[in-house]
Length: 373
Image (cartoon, rainbow, N blue to C red):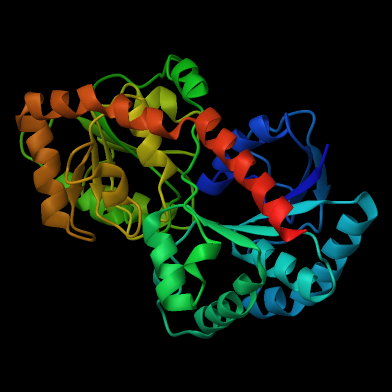
């Protein structure tokens, strides 16, 4: 059985981490899996057959300069560990681990290197600050060292090709895998909240744009539904202040991170997601899997790819409070609008079942391994 290193920054509560957890349960049936982490936060289930190794215990808030300076030392450390245990293939997720693994190749690691890109780099690094400049430089320099790259949407693939010089024949879209059986089982768990509610899920940071969502909600007419936001982050106090300013304390609720958002998704009136940018959002697929109307910003890169021309969910322009408000108002005023999307949601979600995606992935990893020898 081949030994594969699945290298990711942490298994904390994020979208990429959830996808990795879903794939691990399938990969362990075909590989001896070593899960390599740079931080000890684990929020998702890890199969007991997976061997966990901590490359370091990184502080998520350490300075960018320190992060940059540590890269070569971490690369040497990663290479040594992989040499010692006899890793046959690297499967690496998220930018910093990708930089470390690619540097390890420069330092002499010859095993097949496969990267996953779950963001749209030109959007993520759009600012002209030093951190963005360094990140874009590292990506352009190091990503081409990989044998293969899996963007998680077509938009991300095009971004890597057109803006970062990655050869198209070295890439293929790997859509986010969801555990349909787990979602359906967990969606049946009760919640304490009473009454109908709109729901959003995501970190409380500027990229998720919860401030706009709260302001749009505040403008709704004849609204007898609350707004629940699941997630934690640096903007909690700012959002709490906004809720107080708008006199919405008894209508808008920040309930923090919940490892089982599906019990809320299955019971919400509609799911509203107004992120400024995403790679390919897990939350959107999961809300579809719970059979719900999804109202989402047409963020780059995966929203339209997932929803089509308003076929599976309802798209609104990015960072547009008025359009978001109108879509939510339509959901209130037109119950048939909601029912139409509820009827079709699960059909789309089934296309992202982890068993199907993992089976194709494993076949492709074997081909990459064979051709790189």
